Image (cartoon, rainbow, N blue to C red; front, side, top):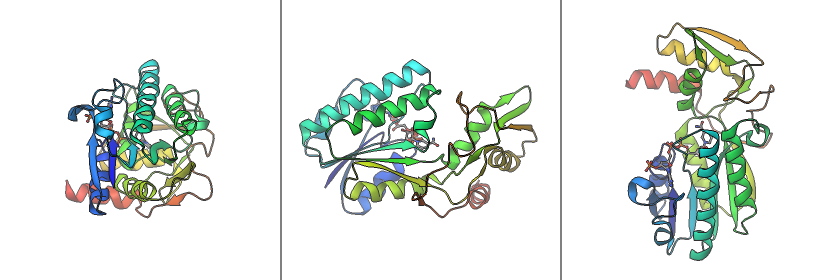
Length: 251
Ligand SMILES: NC(=O)c1ccc[n+]([C@@H]2O[C@H](COP(=O)([O-])OP(=O)(O)OC[C@H]3O[C@@H](n4cnc5c(N)ncnc54)[C@H](OP(=O)(O)O)[C@@H]3O)[C@@H](O)[C@H]2O)c1
């Protein structure tokens, strides 16, 4: 089958593409750096000619409220139109666990808009919501830096390894359309502050962590389980500490 991966050169896309190719499929990694832009529509229609499946793992270069909404709305509309014209039989998008519980964040409003456009597109679809990637925990720490301290939520998260996101996404891509949402997460739920602390200690960073239940997550208030998947999520095996140990050993 021909599978087009929108955002195919990014963190997840560059892991997903070889996995799909190794299962015998023709994979096209589509992104602006390869002349295919979902937001402007440049190169999109020709890329989708003959495609059976399209997977969207693109991400906005800007997380500013208006810019990110424009990115996911325009990109998804263009993708849906091109997929219909090409006769695509399964459209998959990668989203985030808790997206529907984080509407006070501009980024999550944009992800929800992306999900709703796909749900209402008339295409056969599957949305896979993943929890935070291990690689993203450093970004959570950096976002919380203030006056030499790191402010971070004490509510729960359940992050996972990006390679295992790609594995779960490959299985979803090659499965039947769910016409619904499924979830994937890592094996361990713990406070954000706990994961951020372990990350900082591994970097030799001794910044003081200020943890609180009311510290927002990228502008959105968190309840205890906002970022944690529901029962029935697929749980991937790699633990954060095992990844951290490996990252340090291979550095
Ligand atoms: N970070 C997390 O913890 C997390 C958790 C769950 C879900 N997600 C979701 O996972 C998805 C993938 O994230 P990622 O970290 O793999 O992203 P990433 O590494 O930032 O990669 C973004 C990809 O999008 C492409 N892109 C940018 N603008 C585009 C456009 N106009 N048209 C088509 N492609 C475009 C980029 O192409 P170029 O290389 O050419 O610029 C790149 O291939 C996102 O939708 C995100 O919401 C993230």
